[in-house]
Length: 253
Image (tube, rainbow, N blue to C red; front, side):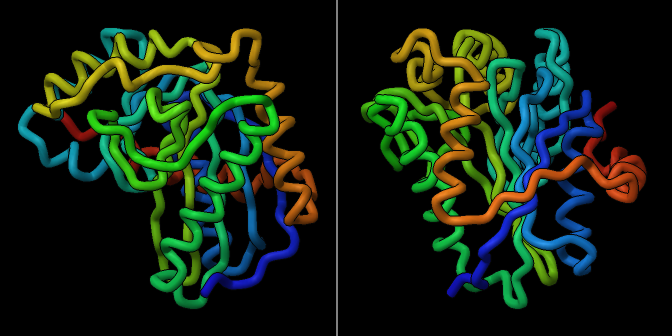
């Protein structure tokens, strides 16, 4: 059962490179310790390829990191689980940190809550959004969101720590070609089989969509369930994030 939440702190700020991931990590730590309440970070990131724990122990990890960098993407180690995922300036990153006395309970409920909320937000824009894994998709997951069962547009991951849970991921609004271009060599290096045709964007099917329009729709849907309180990044969180940056840098020769 989920810990009841009525209000969410909403943070929109982004920072370049590995600091961006470290900020979400610092927020999770602050929520875990009780310094912050339930917090959602919803922002437009820079170009990142975020690698998961399974990627780091793959023999081709170093080559995958270099492939990402060669395509103009900063390589980082992600906060939640899963395989390599891509963020860029036409995507939306989301990071929800919730206080949970027993985070091991409610794992599926948290996934369902976030994916369902995103599906409703996208459907309100006229998109045939559905929850479910597409055969051959990159970073596969049961709670991915696709368009018409054909193209993955949202990836969702979760991380548990003592006293808190993090649900985060990416919404691909436009420039799906950039996702494919970088993931083809990255996944080849990691030895992962996938179908590049399953990677795309919302704008591929609904031209004219922008990150601003999609963020507005997500926030409208959030406001149906939560009281949203917008806040700037606390200085203490930025300080903590600075100390966590090294935790999210790839350790490759």
